[in-house]
Image (cartoon, rainbow, N blue to C red):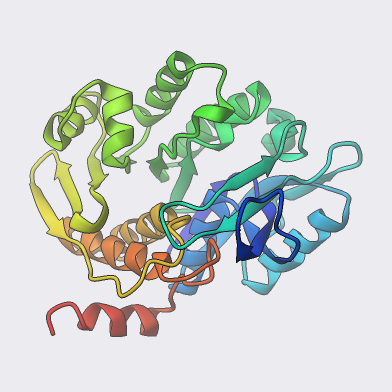
Length: 314
């Protein structure tokens, strides 16, 4: 299997046990969150070798996340600790309708202070792929500079690259800065994976075909646009098409569905599947993920994924 490297900010996650506003909930279950970490876990469960880059605080949350990643079998040798800055954490509400309420505590975190000096000696020789999202460059100017440095390092070492915009306007100074930076990163990557609403914000176009063309004209090789329950639209330099989504029995939690989608598409590419098969797998894992309450709990093994996908045509 392929070797994949990722960079991001993992967070301790506290999930409400009961419905209601976060200010009134009294009981939470602890887990772990972070878009890039979710992708790392998903790819590992499908058999790929994964290395994760980040910086954690020397605190209970940092120790918890380190142990969590190691138990998932992820290579943590590129993770560094900071004596001064804390590990980020997140609260997530419980709801039976729509998206859950989320509160982040990440300002001034250890990961937001990951610097070029921290990653300068990382050797990407032997890795096949680098995955990133638009969240890490949003948390600080320092993290943004570090991410841009790592992209160039990956490209210089011959790694393929994938990028999920994962727009979080609340993390940016303003929407103009967000759009400019996200597109700057996207144009440097081989694969871009926006949701349809994200694509509209980033390109100004109101349909998936024009959004895809916007990125393809800038040299991106694969553009996959998530269309929610309908599935996804994919366009490359040589082919395009719509791939239907999977039936979801009951939506439990929508957070992490996009990360599951990325897992499916990236793993398919790395395993040599054609683009339509990659998108079909992406749709499947996204559907599986919304039927579970944590950000990464539902990410399947190969056997679990195969069983789920076999039900599509029944």
